[in-house]
Length: 130
Image (tube, rainbow, N blue to C red; front, side, top):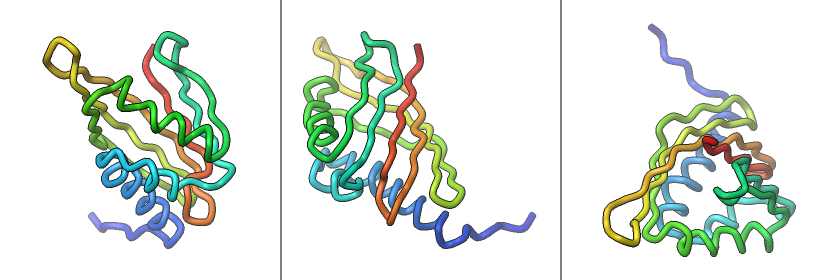
């Protein structure tokens, strides 16, 4: 079996998504998260209303969402379960874990579908189970 080397656009897409998820998100570093998103970014959480589904557009709105994450998921951390890209498009399957109020850890799995523009995340669609 011959390994394939991703083209430059695909490699750049994988790099920004990995940095976003494996570095900035893990550190809860909202400034770094927003540095990897375009000024006109769109984040949509496709989920039932009781799971916080919604749509946030632009740096200020998306920043406010990231800033609120710790209160909803104390001590959160995520792991990439699968990641693939083609050009400026990427799909990422992940697991989020956080501290539960009475002890123990909560867990949630989801999928992100991302579009990269000029080296930054322009669109992040997050899908959660119903």
